[in-house]
Length: 203
Image 1 (cartoon, rainbow, N blue to C red):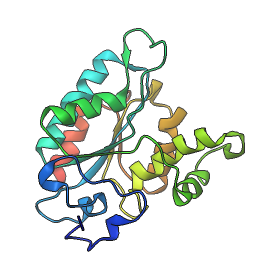
Image 2 (image 1 turned 45 degrees about the vertical axis):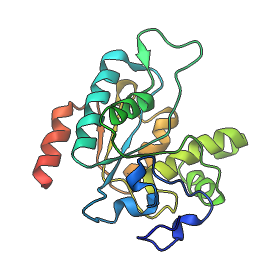
Image 3 (image 1 turned 60 degrees about the vertical axis):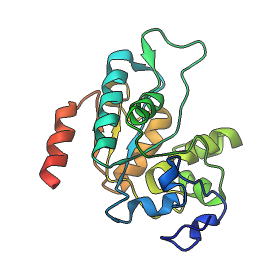
Image 4 (image 1 turned 180 degrees about the vertical axis):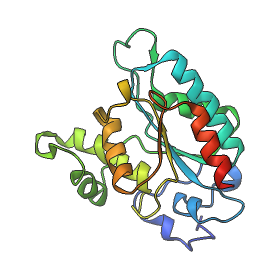
């Protein structure tokens, strides 16, 4: 079905209809347009070794943000095999919280398009050392941060990294966010209350 907002632009390669039935005919490019019935996107990302307590907090944050109309963008990063004890995947925690209230989400587990790969290569410190699969995993962060068309940045990022460092796959997304002055709320060093204060100050 043609997207009634972008007149079919969403039919190009990489298009994914939204999961909720009454949004299924609108493409993810349109989610950040400011149309009253659609809302804004944020990045919900982080380590696959996020402490259990922080993961539960992420679930709550995702539910509350969905209730406010925000659209989750994430990558569905899986837990390690075998999983690190007392940890969970940040991506999965955000998605669970969003799903609890039937929130809207755009999930990109992989980013194999040429445009996403080219964009990701500009932010990775050792792109030449990455094989094709690793490059696709890093490129998904470009899609999460900027959308499939790399032209619609998330409004903010909520994440967790060990000691608040820019490292691992999440570090790729944070380097992109830093380059674009996208606010980052890293729960390892910033309390969730800072996110709510910042949001309330913008309304």
